[in-house]
Amino acid sequence: MLEGKTFFFIGAGNICESIIKGLLSAGSIRPGDIHVANRSNEARLNYLRNYYGIVPVTDKKKAVAAADIIVLAMKPQDVFNALEEIKGSIGEKQIVISVLAGVPTSLIEDSLAIPIPVIRAMPNTSCAVLESATGLSGGRYTTSDQLRLGEEIFKIMGEVVVVEEHLLDAVTGLSGSGPAYIYYLVESMEKAGEAAGIPRELARPLVLKTLLGAAKMLMETGENPEELRRQVTSPNGTTMAGINELNKGDFQNTIKKAILRATRRSQELGRVIIENQYAHK
Image (spheres, helix red, strand yellow):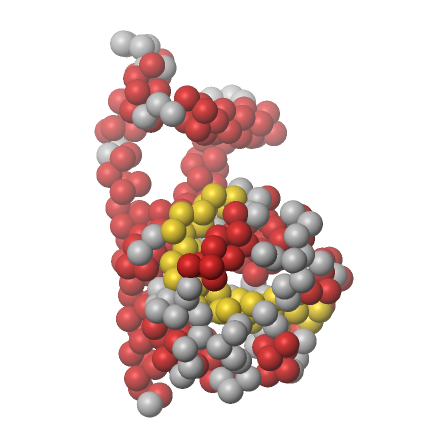
């Protein structure tokens, strides 16, 4: 379904680069089929051109008219101005994919004022290594075939789940922001290893392989994490001693609060953007 498709990315930040790297790594799309524009950072566009071979553009109206798939990847608060720029140059046979936290498909549809298919996606930056976890939802004009095309795009880069749109804020808090939580955990474990006398250059491979092995056990055994944790937690052993310290710090509830706060922040961003849309009218 992707053969011969052309992409136009509006926004050239980290998530744009991660998706581009994923598409190119899988060999599904040629660099010349990817056009990218951003608001003002010419150096960033030159970097993407030099490193990935994509085509930087300045004429957004011309680029959007020529693309099969338009990816909205700017900052969420900039979406209204970006849609105003391309309004009138985009048609109903094209597909818009938004990776913007908190921005509902209805805002994009209403702003463009045509019955255009819109797919809202929440990947994470692990697109770059083809290991993203992506939540996907279609707008009111999106057909099942078009949604399957969206699935195909993001399945190139990892796991995809199709959800009701109201759940995408929670997907944002859980897996969209999730890599940062894992990086923070790795950072903490490395520092703890250092405190225990393990040089950081030795602690890192131990930590990373531990994380990878634990994830692989969960995926390949199908066991619940509670059961696998129980299996390695011997009574009065070293693991239990460590778990007890985590419980003292209310570890599980802290993780829960972080994910719920990120979810609420996605919802807050959406409300602000919708309010700003009405303020422009």
